[in-house]
Image (tube, rainbow, N blue to C red; front, top):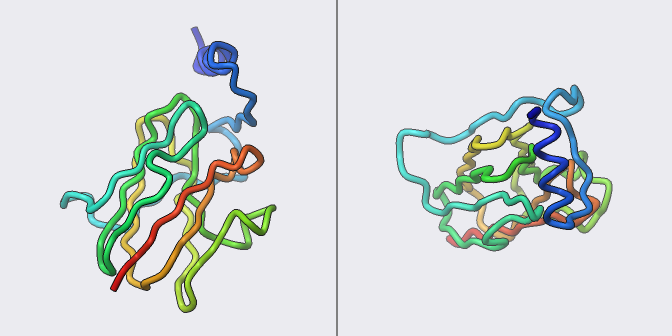
Length: 141
């Protein structure tokens, strides 16, 4: 059974209407990690078959790292870049914070980001922005 067949079956079984983006989609770059994978993350967020970030909100302190784990059958992204959003509500960055984007995270893949600017970050998944796959990271001093 092909990967695409499995994904389509999962969508039908869950009753989830979703925009599926193939891993071969050239508009999405491969995932990049901008934090050390050798140490344990300070918070972990899952990316699910129900097109959600779980938990959808995490709190860390400046200098700490969040790890996103793709536990689903779908490709996902972790995107906090206003230039990549089609909906204004999808992204929020604190003053002085730099935008970031994981690129494509394959099933079972991970992405880490270390937050250095305190404030509230709202991020989204590019392929699933239309179904509002959003998450929030609150960074304290």
